[in-house]
Length: 235
Image (cartoon, rainbow, N blue to C red; front, top):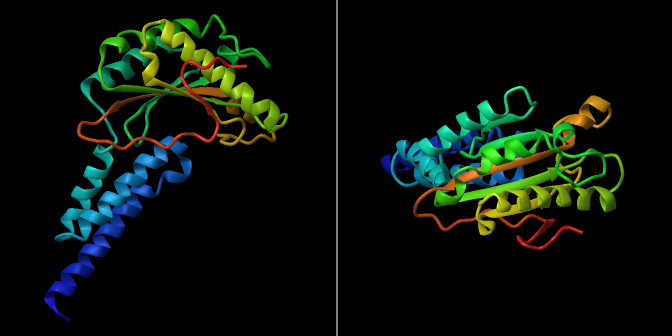
């Protein structure tokens, strides 16, 4: 076999291996997170096929960095939110694609069948909004979720209305409205079984994602299937 063919084969194997490692966790990611992970996988394959196997690792890094950056600001914001939400049941994490995620349970955010923000959630949103208006390149995505009780005709508008309420609250606290996107996913993305009350309680939630767009990128996450443009009131 020609030496160049051997190098190509090794590069391809390295690329696919790197890609598989990056995409292995996609099953547990949201739609937004999967998009950036897939970008990293594509970068791995492209990097591996141009040059030696080390290009796969470099390509993977480029693919990931083409989405979001985890800067010192993001790390400080995570620490701030972990302190602000201690004891509330809110989970504050860094996602695989470098977004800061707040998973807010329904029992502190909204009453049953209501899109009015509960008083216990407001101090958390105040802390989240603090300073975002002065920080360039930030993107906020708010995703409402329900359990499987009821049908889509009920769950989809309710989940969206709750996301819109959070969006409007943050905009009123100085977060630029153009940087906020609200989505309603209804019952389509459960994180627990809907067969039990405990599982349904986990599925009734609002997720807030904060992302810092990496430099020199023009890619954007695809528009959600069920959303409302910023500024359009919930019905």
